[in-house]
Image 1 (tube, rainbow over the protein chains, first blue to last red):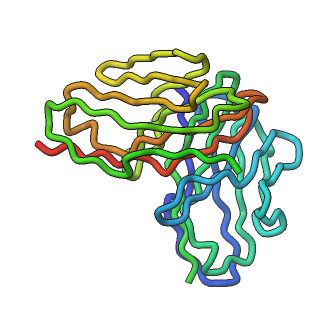
Image 2: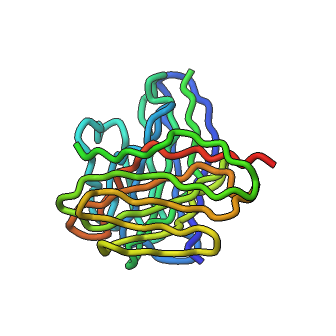
Length: 114
Length: 114
């Protein structure tokens, strides 16, 4: 149990376009979902916390107008990178939390912006 | 900014040997420490969630200890096997609860040589 999927696994887009990444908890309802990103040789860094039915909370330095998060149901959260630029190229990964301390992670999405 | 350090950064171990590595984290305002095992192209797999000073947890050949007063945790692997090759991540949560984002170290990349 506790499987989280993420789609797409890899995306290449042109500068200026928007990209949507989906995160789904497949066999449980997630009260909270988190979005992280990882730049080369760096640790996973928390971008935002997403609670179902409410606005996401963003970490300092993360632009909320650039990284739109929607958590419309207890099993789906989406991250949209708007007007993507090469510096947004990164590895994005989501996690889902239910009632235990453990966070369950998706496999991640590699975004490359040309 | 919370600082979570893992050492060593990478480790080569002969099959059958035992090994261990370290995670250090802030000793104040502790809530929980997570260990994850992350293989390439897969989701990070939760190994342990540790909350109490002096905790020791075990899962097969892998075990972990926790010292919250001095701010460190050790992960041990006994009798390493090729399938143990992965990146091992530790992540810290401050006091406040499990529904908070994780602060990760950069990981220890373990390679088991046959």
